[in-house]
Amino acid sequence: MGAMQQMPQMGGCGYPAVSPSQYYPPQVLPAQFSPTNQQVQYNQQDVYVPMIHPTQTTQVNQMNYKYVHYFPQNTNVVNQATQQNLCGTVQPIMAPCPPPCPPPCGPCGPWRKK
Image 1 (tube, rainbow, N blue to C red):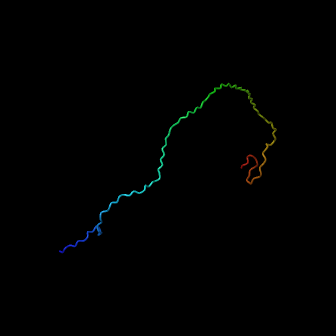
Image 2 (image 1 turned 180 degrees about the vertical axis):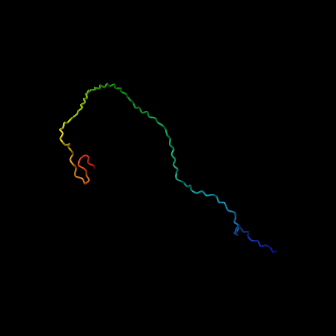
Image 3 (image 1 turned 135 degrees about the vertical axis):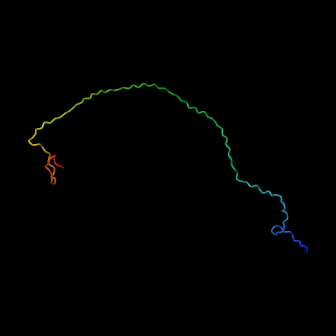
């Protein structure tokens, strides 16, 4: 076979090989500030203030005179009775007749059928 031709060496996917990357010194940008986080710390101390509330008790002894009035009462009972003396007639007195009723209606009086 004939002499092989030398081809330039290819990198991945057919691209030429890349030389190693160069290192640059780091850069420092201006500082970025977030809003300040506010924190509150409370310090507490108990302070006692004496409050005086005086009390005075007065004892009062009182006598109450109560006059009791009595009204005795008697009860009487009266039993009443009345009587009447009437003179009778030959015929007994009958109640007046009601308006006439349709036949067959019996004679007028308390024995009448309703």
